[in-house]
Image (cartoon, rainbow, N blue to C red):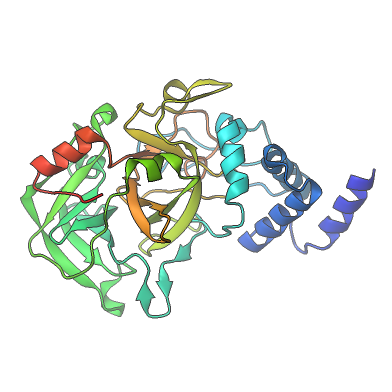
Length: 346
C-alpha cells in the first residue's frame, strides 16, 4: 500500500504524461525507480518498466528501418518484456550506466562548445544517396559497415563535421577512391564480418581513432555509439552520441533463453551485443558503420566495433531494442584491414 501511495504522488508530480513522454520524464521515472530499491541491480529495469506501464508511457511504430529487415513493431511497454530485457547481463550493465541520460535514439550532440568530441566520426553518402556512418582509422581510410556497399550502393563522399548539411557549417567533404574501397563480406554474410573500408582520395589532418585492446572491449560495461542516423523524430544527418549497456561482449555467452548466437542472431567471437531496453538508447538507420567506442583507463575513448544490425530476438521496435556490432580487434578482421591497406594501432 505504501508503494502505491508513493507512486500516486509521483504520478501527480509529472504533468501531461498522456500527451508526451519525453526524455526528461523518462529520466525522472528512472530516478524514481532507483529510489524504490536502492542498489538492487536486478530489479531496476523491471521496476522502471512497471512505472512506465503505470504512467501509460507507450509508443508504436510500424516502420522497419534497421538493416536486416526487422519485423514490424508494436507497443514499447504494454506487453511482455523482451528476452534481452530479462538478460541478467543487460540488467547489471543497465544499472551501472543508468546515470548516462541521453541516447542516440534520443541522443546528444558530440559538440562541446566549438569542439567536436568525435571528429573522427564521419558521414558517408553513396552514389545512390544512401546515408551511412563511419570512423577515420588512418589519415586516408574510414572503416564502416560492409552492408553499406549493398543494394547497389557505392560510397562516394565522406563528410567530416557534425551534420550532413554542408552548407551551414565548416564541414569538409572528401571524395572516395571507389577502386580501393570494399566490403569484407558478401551482402548478408554477417559471419564473415560486417566491415568495410572506404579509401579517401586525399589524406586528412584530422586525428584518427585507434582500435581498443581486446581486454578493454571484453570488460566494457557500455559502448558509446556515435552516428548520423535516424532519431525518434524521423530525422537524420546530425552527429549524435549515446552510451548503451553491453549485453554480450563476444556473443559466446548465454542467458536463460539460450546461447547468445541463437537468441540474438550474433556470431561468436566476432560480434558484441548491446541494448538499453525501454530507453530508446540504440542505433538506427543511417548509424550503420558508425563507431562503437569503449572508455579506457586514461579517460579516452578507443574504437571497439561498428554498427551492423538489430538483434534477432523478438523485439518490439525497429530501433531501440538492441544492436549487433562487429568487433575490430578480431584477428580475421584486423588481417583483412591490413590486406586492404589499413593498419590499425590498438
